[in-house]
Length: 341
Image (cartoon, rainbow, N blue to C red; front, side, top):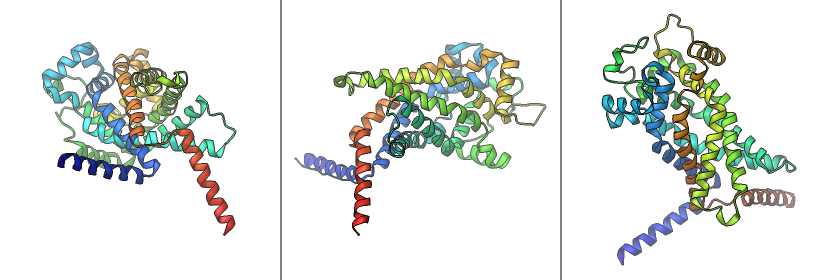
């Protein structure tokens, strides 16, 4: 009896907190939770993908399952989650900003341009701007995550030609931040941000475009079905990633350039790096790790969109059309009250 009363009180407190939260805060929370869960589920595949992209000779030659065995043997189970702390620390604010900014940009476009078509092009534009906004604010954490994931331990460190000899260049997230900042300043923390932005604008836009477009063709009585959301999210992530993957490879290689021994200390730009990879490593290298990325992106985007929609329902976020109507009504009320005074 006491337990039920306590549960009821906790429920009432939670209801009060949820009701008191502004809509943008609910969208931030929903996006952050969605991003954290999705990223943790696919973290082992993300580690293997980064090693495929940056340590080509050592890991590509032994394939996906060989790489998984090698990491398990030399680094143990936790090796699959190397750099995941920085990854989750990045993805939670990134996803929170991404989803919230998408909703805000979408509403802003509708309110600013009332005649603009509310079809998939709206989702494409809102998603693109939201992706760019989220990248700019969270990019240093992505850089740190990649540098930490790039490091390997065990006997392999002495057998890789052209790599820095020490077993650990960075001891953790804060150490990586401070060393990178000392080496190259703020610019060093944004090394590789250009290909990220080139890639995220089309990727984020296409992801939302495909997801919302697919949901429009789902019968009304099936729209709340979890499996339907998962399928829509999977296809959206798959198509979006395919078009923009080469820029992801360029970004990763730019991020770890300082960890590679080179005769030249000059850091190359986005298109120089793209051309160099194609010339020296072959065109196929621009799609290195894509098969792993498909295995990662399908569940990641599917889980992300699904958890986001579920969290929005739990936090009682109104539908997009209702939210726009509410904003318009509030705007009119403010204008009429100011005219009356």
